[in-house]
Length: 337
Image (cartoon, rainbow, N blue to C red; front, side, top):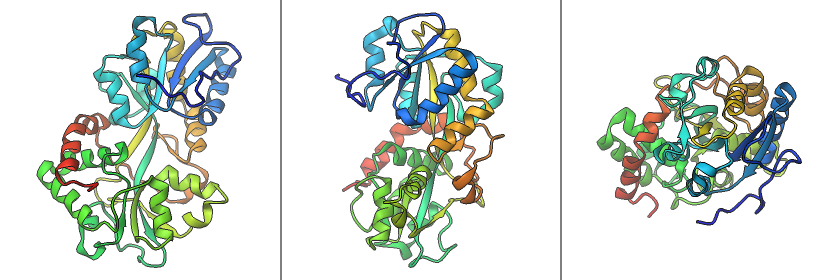
């Protein structure tokens, strides 16, 4: 499978090309954009003297690692969404990391039981509501989305998008498959239109009067507020942290894994440890309006101004394990149809 690179080429944050092995280097495959990683990796190099080389891609990193096998130059993979991360585990492309530092900094529910991945940041799956047409407090849980009062008033992106698959997976974990299917059917019954677009498009749809309620990730909202062209649209919605009074808001993650082939394993583990540290957690979370995975580090700036988010403590690995069941439910109710 041909991999589509972010800029059609491998991009290094240093001038040095990626080498299979070299003293003082660590090689990174990443789905995350360059502007998010650059301040982090510069700080890592400043602190350790270890050079970082990065390949940025939009898709296909698992396939590339499979193709390269033991000859892969990659030491770590940085990616988003628990299902993407778990794909690396299922294909036996990543290795265990046993680090007291990382285990201390990253909670168990945000890491693999055997240390094959660790969350670095989290993002909440929020409910957005029209400031003009929905009263504050009128909706407070994911379960509320099935209320008949919202018929024809809800917008979402495709049910098969990884962010919605993860949400359905969490509903299975909390309620079982039968109740989760009833919930998903209830949400579908209340849709204002067929699922389409991305999370920003759902906020835009509220502003345009297409719907009054939408699902979206917290960082999209934050990025819209930071964009002067999109800010007027984002300012027309309120955000709701669902299920604050019970289990908490469903979260997804960005994370990191050590590859099986890592030629610079010690440097890679130092990078993972650094990225779990308080300073790196602040830098990384602030770069994309996200939440630190380290619970000791509180969000700052705009994200802090939104109010406290109580995250669901459900293991992200359990969510990953429910993925196939979630996809079956989405197909069964023909959510996108």
